[in-house]
Length: 276
Ligand SMILES: [Zn+2]
Image 1 (cartoon, helix red, strand yellow):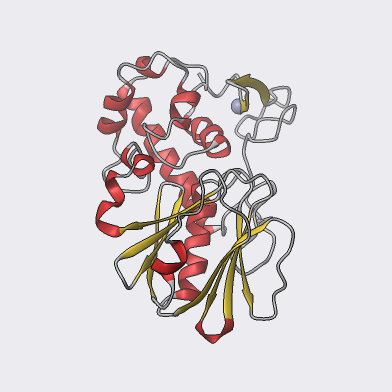
Image 2 (cartoon, rainbow, N blue to C red):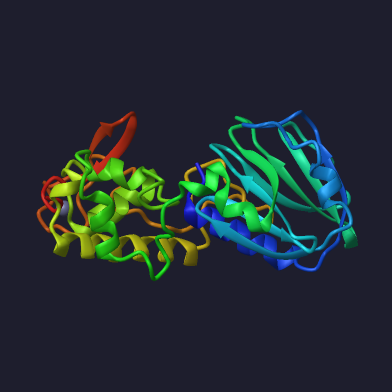
C-alpha cells in the first residue's frame, strides 16, 4: 500500500512534468473507484493548466488554474504512470489525463480502492475526507506536546494509534513499525501511558524515518510504480519490517531476533528487547 513517502515522491514526480501543462483530454474507463467519478470531472479539468502538485496526508492534490483541485488517493494498489502519447491503455487503467506536449498520466488501480474527485480549492479542508485528517508528521506543528494531547485518552496500543489518520496523517504499517523501533517503544504499549520523553523520541523517529524514505525515493514492497514508470523497489533498508527471525540490528547478542505479532489484522515487527 502506498504510504506517505510514496505519495510524496509521486507528487514530486508529477510536479516535475506537469506544472504549467494544459489539460487537453480526460478519459474515465469505468464509472468510478471507491466513489463514482464526479459527473463534472472532465468539464472542470478540460483546458485548464496545472499550477502545482501538493500532498495532504495520502491525497495527491493537483491544483488547477481555474481554482479547482483534482484529488487522487491511491488506495491499496493504485499507482500513477507518466507516459507519452504512444501509451496504449492497459488492464486496470481507470483514469487517463492527456496534456499539451503529448504527456499523459494514467491511474492504474487493480483493487479499485483508490479515489478521484474534483473540488474547489477553498472548500478542500471542509470536505469529509480532509476534515478528519490528522496533522502532517513532517510539519513543524507535529510536536511531542501535540502527540501527547492526541494520545491522552487513547487506551489502544501505540502501534494502532499511529495508524489512526486522525492522530497523525499518512503513517502506514511499515513506517509505524520502523519509527517505534527507533524510538525504543514496544508496539504493544498503551498509548496514553507513554512518557513525554519517549513521545519526544517517537516524534523525532517518525520524522526521521519518513524523511529518509522520501530521500531514498520512496519505498514499498510491491504495487508502487515510480512516476517515471519504473518499479518502486528502492534501496531502503528496514530495521525491523519484514525481518522476523533475523538478528536485531542494534543488539550485539546474536540470539536476539525480531518478532512478528498481529495487531488488528496487520503484521507488527519489533525487537522484544530494545523496545519496551
Ligand atoms: Zn533489539
